Length: 379
Ligand SMILES: Cc1cc2nc3c(=O)[nH]c(=O)nc-3n(C[C@H](O)[C@H](O)[C@H](O)COP(=O)(O)OP(=O)(O)OC[C@H]3O[C@@H](n4cnc5c(N)ncnc54)[C@H](O)[C@@H]3O)c2cc1C
Image (cartoon, rainbow, N blue to C red):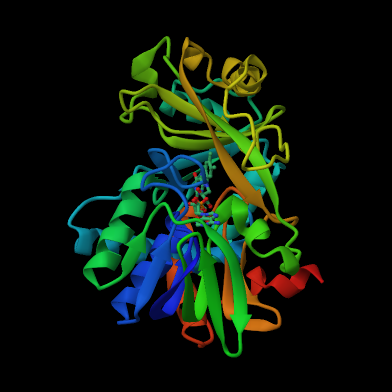
């Protein structure tokens, strides 16, 4: 039964994946009275932020305008680590490999050169000497960037939430939101348990963002992703001492992965089958076709890792048509802020997006240039 919750908040954050959790933390740190809501239990695996690791990289192949944001994100991850008294960001270096005229190598080089990011451009023979796990066509090159690495994903979500609570945020799990409505200059959130008034509302609902804001007609597609862990035939070639975090562009698409930390060698195909799904009903079972899509690149370019499959899991991307993010106030309803920073590459930005979302929810312009992420670009 829906009752009327007498409490009201400066800001209600709808969805507590990494983005909602980061926004909640930044708002609570500013002394705002904030409530975070999620429909599932803490640590669930139904959205986009679960799992052990996410890549962070500085020389951003998607577009150089992401570089100032990711630079600020590095700073904020370090500040978060200090406050949480634990490591979340591991700088290991990253190798981004492919044909010299491919989107990955070209885009990475463009960003590195424009923003004077330290990097080495290395030809395939030297790359395979340095990292014997790779088998590469002789014309391939790799951009090796020492600042790249990975984030501990679930620990990052937990750290944001724990510190948000420490700064006074309220968090409620298992509370599905049914509607978000503008009300005069404020907004109202209707859940299964309450109707809550707030000065502003941040919608960070990942794959459910469009369904929570049906009138906004956001052009977001939810796509099914698959991650796989293999037992390398030559384990030493894939240990963190001998193998980097990597992206490789090949005839099979863009694959990415991590060295083996004892739980197998984790590899995935970016965008996988790019198959649009319903987040309520999508196939969470991994099939032999899924495995084949990932193995194709391993067989050709990482043959020593082409051992037995140890584990495989699914996850969801929420993708905008141009591959960028959506971070903006809802047109016609300034008290509602939409955050869909995914398109398969958002995690690393969580703290800087959290900072920008806190500005927008406070009624201020964002301190960061997020003009690339406006909703109006789809008009
Ligand atoms: C397989 C995979 C690999 C990735 N790799 C990388 C990477 O290497 N580097 C990188 O930077 N990024 C990566 N990303 C992208 C990154 O993980 C996402 O951008 C990020 O996790 C998005 O977080 P979010 O908070 O927006 O969404 P989510 O994590 O999905 O959170 C949304 C939350 O909203 C809640 N919610 C939804 N509807 C309701 C409702 N009605 N009521 C209450 N709660 C609701 C959900 O339960 C969920 O907890 C990857 C993503 C995937 C899936």
